[in-house]
Image 1 (spheres, rainbow, N blue to C red):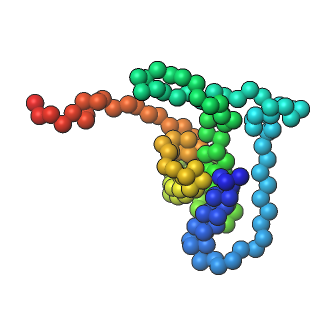
Image 2 (cartoon, rainbow, N blue to C red):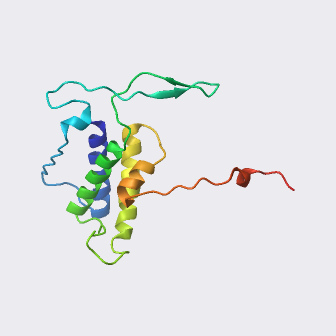
Image 3 (cartoon, one colour):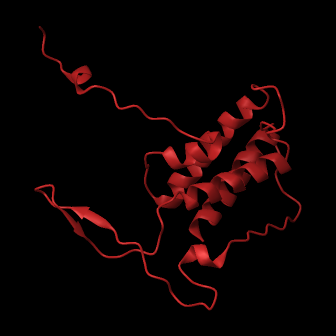
Length: 157
């Protein structure tokens, strides 16, 4: 999995830089997933794929080649959880404790996690995406309010 490989390589490079460690003891990482999420049912039969929608120049939608991904941010969740686990394991950052009453505890660590997870995700994807899925995985939710197009109007009144 390219996402796991990019995340491990870049996160260990970051950890080495932050801790001045030149080599690491062997570590075992197990990643478990539910087979039904990955386009197969319990009997290993392929389930219907999600259709990809493309826009034509005139704005009309048409179905393009079907793809085998859900588009629900699973790669972002995988990358973010792996980066968080490694940063915590090597005591590089303190992340917020969900049971903690202090709202600011671990915020700086969360910012570091966000930046590194975004970086790893972009490297694995080979492009810079919107970043909403990684941000949601790190911070829990995102609220987006579209700004008025008039903000971009450069004409003087």
